[in-house]
Image (cartoon, helix red, strand yellow):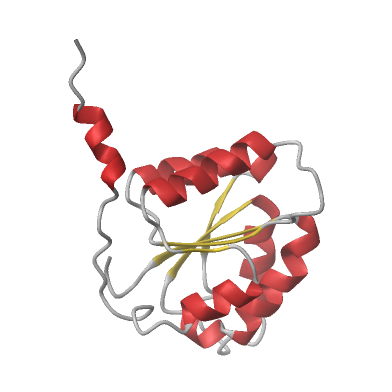
Length: 154
């Protein structure tokens, strides 16, 4: 993992305000990195980062995927499996059923499978962003699961 990270930010509707507040409070730490987001979250994050930017400066661009229920979670999962995501901030709502719950579960499964540092709420996000590794190179050790592809089938 390079010093400049590819950071995915995702939030369910009831958690968007909390994610945006987290980003606003950690703006300077996040600006040097590449941001990826699903649907509405991406639009909101891009708008937030454009506010208070340097006059005349190019606004921070966010790679915006489709909305989660429209395939954005699956796009993000594919990016994780292709090694294009280093960190995942996914503020998900434990109290609200999601129509795309299977996609959410698949995304979280891939994050664990590929050993991606993941924060699912404000406290874990603050711990992750304050890590000594956040702005430094870091080597993610591959999980033991990849032996599966080379298993012996009789």
